[in-house]
Image (cartoon, one colour):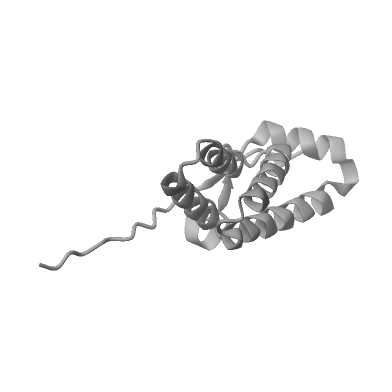
Length: 127
C-alpha cells in the first residue's frame, strides 16, 4: 500500500496596519525611511534565525519576542501575530504546532512566497 503525503504551501499576504505605520513615521520624522528599512532588515534576519534555530528553545523565544516587538512597532500585524503563535506553542509545549507555526513564519518572511508584503488599506500618504 502506498500513501502520498501532500505538503501544503499556502499563500498568505503579510499585512501592515496603516495607522501604526503612519504614527511610527510621524514619530521618526526625517529618519523614518531609514528606520523602517532597518526594521524590515531586522524582521528578515530574525525570521531566518528562527527558522535555523530548530530545537534551541531559548533562542527561538528571544528571537520571537524581538520579532514581535519590531513588527508591532512598524505595524506588521501578520508577522507580529505569527511570532506570537510560535511563543504560544512554546509556552504550551506543543511540538507539532510549533513546527507548523515556525514553518508559517518562515514562509511569511519570504515576500515572494507570500504574494508580497502589503498594507491593509493603501494610504494616500504614509506620514
